[in-house]
Structures are given as structure tokens and as C-alpha cells.
Length: 152
Image (cartoon, rainbow, N blue to C red; front, side, top):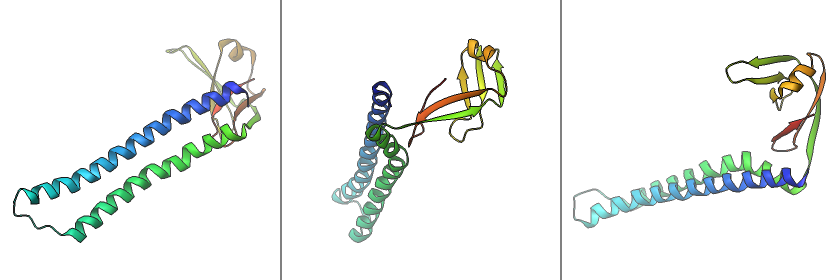
């Protein structure tokens, strides 16, 4: 992988990691806020039935769900991108153009490809006119995260 491609993926990882961390902190604050609200009502002298064991189990459950809801998407998405930045490998796949499409409203041109990673790619008008259905084209993407870089 070229340095610019690695830098692009690294920037995406950092941005997504910031979002995941923000969500995790928000979920922890909500979990603690619920416990705080219940304790506050008890301190104010309102008649509520307070069960410390049950409250603790609910708090642990909420914190566990918060952790899993952030960790599992991280594991599925960001870890692959991090592996891409560490190993710096990319895949070049040679494919046959199965269909072409022009969208007049946005003046964009697309090739349809028989790839498991990238089904359609947007191409320039020049390439759209130059290549025909059945011609071969190569696409490149990161090995683990399957982040598309381009075609040639």
C-alpha cells in the first residue's frame, strides 16, 4: 500500500474510534445517571422500594451491554482497518465488466463488476466510453477492511 492510502485509512480509523469512544462514554453516563437518579430519590426521603442487589445487577447489566455494543462493532470494523495500516497490503482484482450504466440526473457513470467486495464503481466519462461490456478492469482495495482505492 502507498503512504497516502495508509494515511487515508489511519484517518478513518481515528475518526471512527473517536465516535466509538464517545458512544461508550455516553452509555456509561446514562447507566450511572439512572443509578444516581434512583439514589437521589431515596435520599430525598421519597417512599420508593430500593433493593441494592437488584440495582447493582441492573447497573452491571447496563455497563456490560454498553461495553458489548461498542466493542463488537469495533472488533468487526475498526480492527480490520487497523490491520490494514499495520501490514500495508492491498488486493488487486482483475474483473470483467458485466454491465454499464449512465445516470443522467447526476451525470455519473458506473460499471457493474462480478466482485464480492465491490459490485459497482463510479468511473469517468472517458473510461465509460472507452471500455465495453466484457472488457477487463482491475480494482484495488485494502486486504482486510476491503476499503476501495480505485481502478485501472
